[in-house]
Length: 433
Ligand code: HEC
Figure 1 (cartoon, rainbow, N blue to C red):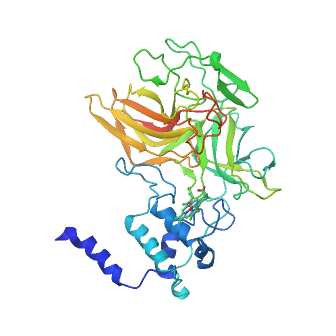
Figure 2: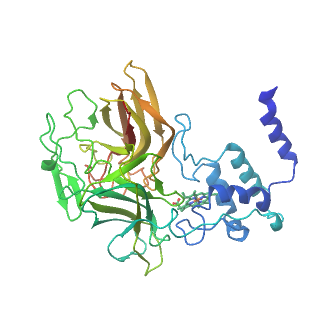
Figure 3: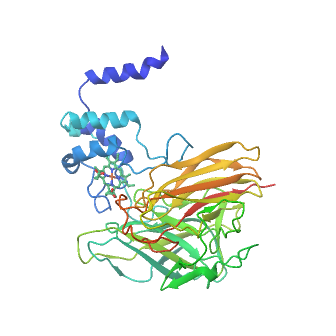
């Protein structure tokens, strides 16, 4: 009998008055949308009030029905996520019923209090603030990915417990990351392993950006037994300090953990400036650092699991690229951030346990370069020594991929968005003995 309850409720709703903005829809928008959809933010319209939301009603129904909004790409069949943005089926049904009924306002006196947003530091005054070092002028009608590298005045290094990347101008900054880079390495680990003398010999620098030489060896399947040991970490390893995506809270590291900033590190800001029409927009984005009180119980670590040697032919609609990692110690995994460029199509993270059993940790069936989401596990995942993580990514370099800037290009690894990458940022903790 119990199994019938939801059906009964739905049926009951169908006969009730249609949902209205003030009582039924505003609470959903306040909780799920206005983190991005509010004035002077990167989303095209505010959903804070009826007047601003009403003209978008049809587009809203469509975008929630197709789950285009809120942006979230993990297949719900696998994993439980602390930051899962998906609307429930009931919320979607309510929004659609509201639009189908002509998007009525209801009684504005019944509107709940709108959430308050502080445009300042979310975590209070930081211990240190570093900005991109220049007033960046945004070119209208152009999507731009810009890199800014600035020195960090920390000659002794520091432990940090949180960091907040704050756009200087929220209208133009679509998203961004701040990474640590160490002196002379410019972000690249120069690995020397068993059968790969060094990655540096295959790298070419062009201004601030790096790429792999076209004649570097190709290994799309870096899980094969005969693959050379590929370097897997970058620069100071725990690389990323903070990222900004509209609506995402600042990066506060789990209790008892902190990240180490080695002496004389530099910060690299990677900022995506969204395509906007207005001329004369400028930006000076900044990051606030919050120091930890001394050494933490545990260092928050991150591995950047990459395959630098991908090689994708012009027009190729479905190139598979793999990268494996064999755990030589127990670890707790905390989060995954898949990172590819315009041709990235889908990604699967599969764990093979020492007994041979397999488990999919994360599946992203439809990757979208525009939304570089972090998937944070609700519970840390204990991975025993002897397990293997296999990351499998498919790339669509054909003209059918609407995001593809040039299907005639052969693709190798490169920092530029028009080149490709295969990186997964994976946060983890060591298991204390
Ligand atoms: C993480 C930020 C974010 C959240 C949360 C979000 N949006 Fe959006 N939305 C955007 C941005 C940015 C755009 C601009 C176009 C794009 O990038 O897709 C957009 C575009 C839209 C559009 C117009 C384009 C389309 O897809 O039809 C609609 C409608 C929309 N959002 C509705 C919603 C609703 C309703 C919610 C909540 C249920 C929501 N959004 C939550 C950021 C967000």
